[in-house]
Amino acid sequence: MEKELLRGGNIIKAATGVEPFLVRFPYGYLKPDAVEAAKRHDCCVINWSFGCDWKKITAGEMHDKYKKAIKNGAIFLMHDLHENKKVLSFLSDFIDEIKQMGYEIVPVSELLNLKQDRYFDSGGLKNLE
Image (cartoon, rainbow, N blue to C red):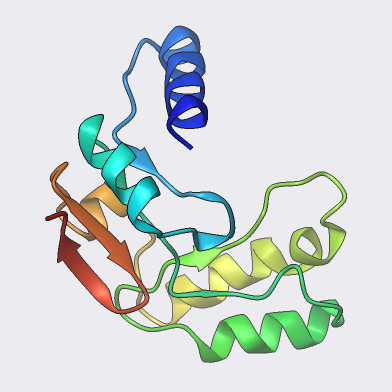
């Protein structure tokens, strides 16, 4: 896990000039080794509050599930794979719906007023200790 964290961080820094401090481990992995690796590298671990884009359901069913999960502070997991056509088929309209409901879409660091010694999962914001 630590090697992947370093490799990914180095790639992002080389491409953008910015050293990342936010990380989402694959599959929402939050075992002690991952959390400790993040802590050693001053990273803030982020997980999502809802996601279903990997499930074998229709685009309409997926849209409805995401819509039911809209609430203040929601963090949606949506994979940005080119073959993820179901998400792409409703995403633009879904973003418009979110805005029409009075919500604002902001970067996760702004949403959670993040500092590097914290992490977020479906249970809320927690300190890395």
